Image 1: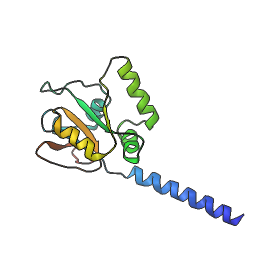
Image 2: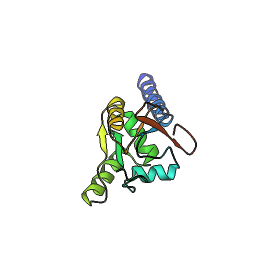
Image 3: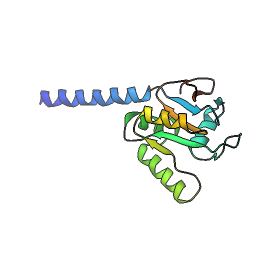
Image 4: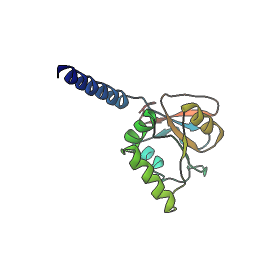
Amino acid sequence: MSGVFKGLVLACLLVLLALQAQAQQTLAVIAHQNGAPTTLSFKELRSVFRGEKQRWSNGTKVMIALIKTNNTLGETISEKVYAMKPDALNKYWLALVFQGRASAPYFFNSVPELQTFVSQNPGAIGIIDQPISTPEIRTVVVDGKRTL
């Protein structure tokens, strides 16, 4: 019985550590140099990522790029930015697109794929695990910070 109890305690600790690591995951908003503003409030960011904004102030179409929700980074983005569980986020987007209220986001398996998409598409905005700057991509400052 003691071995089973130890195993159960160990499993619980591992789950708690995984949840803590997810909660502490750094997120950074990146955007193509042409389109998204250099700064946003978190409220504005959430509005953009919920599909409520279709065009940037310069007229460029908003293109949302997300990591798929079947991995830790995608789950963290879903919970921190959307305040939704991954399944709820997927249903949210299906409903918006089906109702014709928004264009579907572009989903990617990895950060490099998402970065490539953002670098090649004016108006693109995405969330990754660390701030970056390249000639085509900039980190968007949210509420005065480079990370969420």
